[in-house]
Image (cartoon, rainbow, N blue to C red; front, side, top):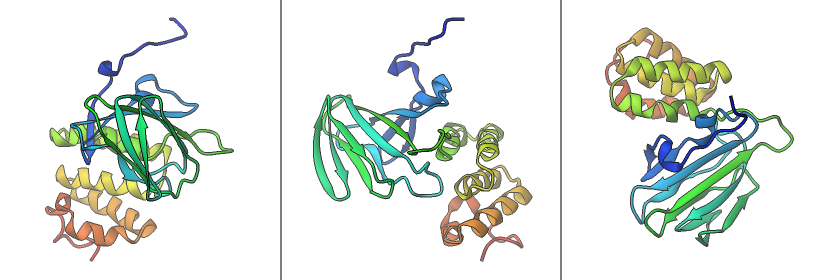
Length: 214
């Protein structure tokens, strides 16, 4: 086996993750374990090409991140500041707590994101497991989606974001006991998820069950 692999953007999965963003999982494609790297495109001009987020939440990795506009043009917003970013622009966000996002200004805009936690050995971010499960969830392949998130939970035991999304999938799959157990675990770690669960349609089938967080 060669000590290298090659792939083109069109060889990667293209997974909608909200706000018009399409996630192309580079790290998962090559099973890279030393640093985080992903590619992003948008569904159309004016949509997000980097979702509005920070790196301090339970699903994030606490990373500092470098964004590279590989093709096209984007407008980044970092901590409220707008940045015009044509192809060849590097945008480095050192502070994990800063909000950041980017809007595609041209068709075919591609942004590469690289990240890691300073001074720590790289760990795969918790969000990868439930983002990777989105296609299976949309196609009602619930067992596959659950397996992907269970694998993420083995890497991040007790992570509330993974537990919550796993509970969503289990509720949709009518695995009520598992869904209630994992939702209770998520809420015990991150109490604000209790309120989110009240309005989440994924839990419609179990909301009347004893043990659902009230």
